[in-house]
Amino acid sequence: PTSSHTDEEVEEFYKKVKELHEKGSDCHFKLIIGDLNAKVGIKTNGDSVMGSHGTGIRNDRGERFVQFAEETRMHIMNTYFKKHLKRKWTWRSPNFEFKNEIDFITSSHVRIIKDVSVLNQFNTGSDHRIVRAKVAFDVSNERKKLVQKTHEEINLENLIRNNKVFDHKLSTKLEEIEPKNLGPVLKEVAKEVGGTIKTKERQKKLSDETKTLLNKRREMKINNNADKIEYSELCKTIRKKMKADIDEYNLKTVRDAIEYKKSYKKAKQMLMIGKKQIIAID
Image 1 (cartoon, rainbow, N blue to C red):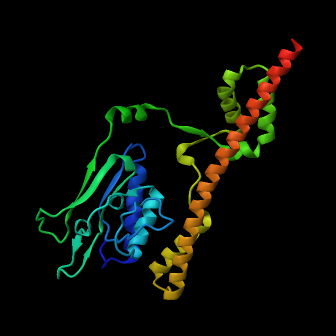
Image 2 (cartoon, helix red, strand yellow):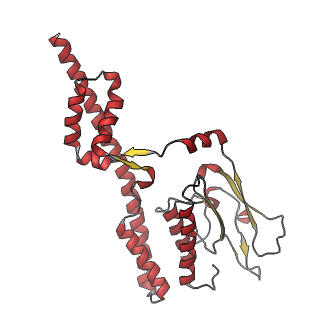
Image 3 (cartoon, rainbow, N blue to C red):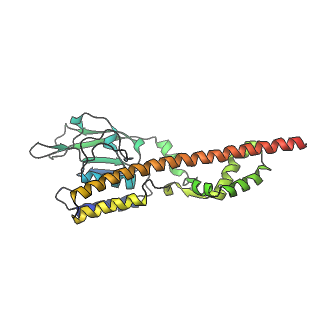
């Protein structure tokens, strides 16, 4: 949508693109390419879908585009590659006064995009320049991934919550197994107690509170009744909340992994003690 379109039309546009994105859930790779009429600027602490080579200052439409990219986990690939400023701008105003980067290539997988650059040797008859992405992937490796079953993970939250049940069930199993079989047995008991979650059902990075603030900001823009100071303060709060949510998500991931490793270590110690006791009885 161009600057002449209303915020309602912008929201309708992103709603339709998101619906198309979700319809392609069976697609292994996804690319969304085009003129978003948005300036994403430089990566902030809360951005997980941008590289470190953004340019300029982010505007409101850029903020909305980054939010969309976060929601759909589409990486803004223009920002992942270092280029001279002359090779970054994609649009020039009719009077040649302004140049901005507003055409983007986004990808669901960073690893398949090897380069994104602007081509200036072609006269397209437009005020936009061609943006080219180099895409490459290992066909045999990707084929293997495609035929794999849906990946499931142990629900660590449930497992930690039911740690006493886990310890009890595991202790009964330890009497019957050899040390070399500890890994598979530990995983079996962990699945039984904690259950599993599909990869797509992983904990979301943004909290409900942050999402509520994002919706509030969106409504303020649509209704055009936002006080400038209030809106600016809300944007600052959202940035802080997004950073805090992502930090908490990363911390929780590490904490869960540590708790799981503690359980594994404890089980191994219990198993070795049990074996020593059996040898002593013999």
